[in-house]
Image (cartoon, rainbow, N blue to C red):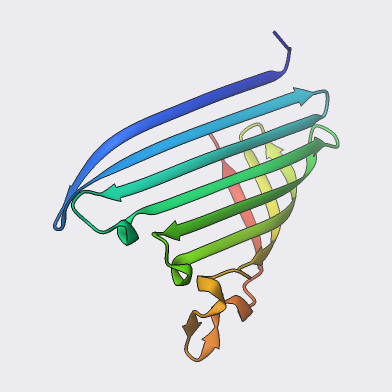
Length: 158
């Protein structure tokens, strides 16, 4: 009903077998995109839960995440974009097993040909809520690690 708008909903149920028995996995996702002129907006939200049968409630795992993204096509060759993404995981009622990650990304792309672009991206990563702030790796608290990323890619699509 609205030109340029696309909306989707996905749901899946899966019984997964493994060495420790079986578990039920449920996945729910919602996505949308809207394009008008040189501007494109996209977003997605997803929730996954796994519940091992015959296991204590502390074994239940849940993950939720979303992203929102905007892109601007400056001209037929150059585009710019920004994205915010957020993921959280939780296992049972244990605060030491709750984690949250978020990323702010900025991008620039140059189109070399119809299906080939050079893309530069800088990701500002935030893990300030890992394991209740008590998780360490080689003596350093994980939420203190600086792992921002710059990537330069040559992307071909077909």
